[in-house]
Length: 346
Image (tube, rainbow, N blue to C red; front, side, top):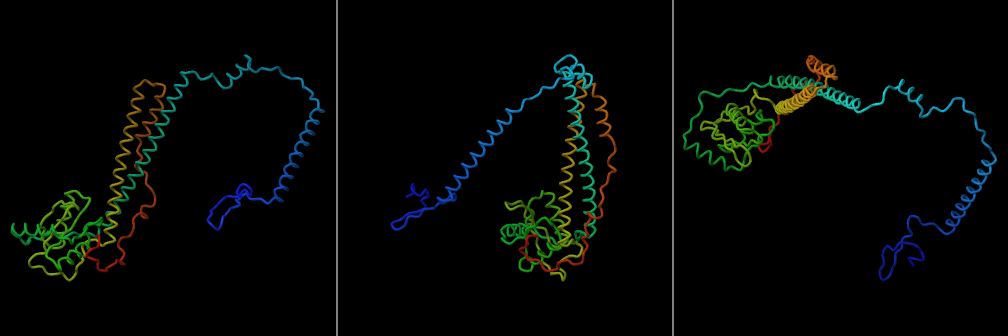
């Protein structure tokens, strides 16, 4: 049945056999009409071709006399081409032209690198301005002179207990802000110790964070250890601890401003890295130009001098518009003053 019908066998069982006729299925009547039309088109094309051949055979071409003699490949044609286009390129001229192309490429690369360097410096200045605007709202507290003293035995015991604590605060990219101190007081409500874990920082940065938290919270710094999760900072609330009425210090940055400070610091670090890479590339291109001059290419001395003059020009006065638009207002009063959860990622 498959051979007789030309269909495709889809499935079969004891009772049914399913065939699919296919996408190109055509009924016999339609197929007959299509075949007749195709034969008619072929016959018509053959008749048109015979008529075209008869018409071309009846036409006799009349050759025209040439007004000017043929000069293709003659000495006169060669002299005329030389006078119009100059001498043909030999190996020496081709080498000289390649040298000029290489110098032009280096010139374009150096100009592009110099322009990128100027733009990067401008962006760094904008980031510094934005960071300074955010830092205006920060007035860190100083360490109190009358710190509570604990014995070595107590410090050893608190350190051992703190490292075993399962409850901890994870310090995120905002670092120290008012929500961090608030969560520390939330932990001190039920326990004497609080453990803060810091990731992705150096020891000096973690030490600075620990001193800042000790000054802002009023607790006692017990230990600063490196663990598998990161650096662990353990604080003791003190024997005479009293929970303050205002848990969020007003002298620290809010959650929104702390995020803005983190973004500006990250932007400044990335731009400084980009500037160092650009300076290295510019130095490398300059050294290549010096080597090209030392190779004895005196014919390109003017181009090299032009490149050096362009690089030594003072382009630092270029400024982009929109500096004020770049600086955002971080002093809005519609801050989210809701209490943060103690398990929140700070």
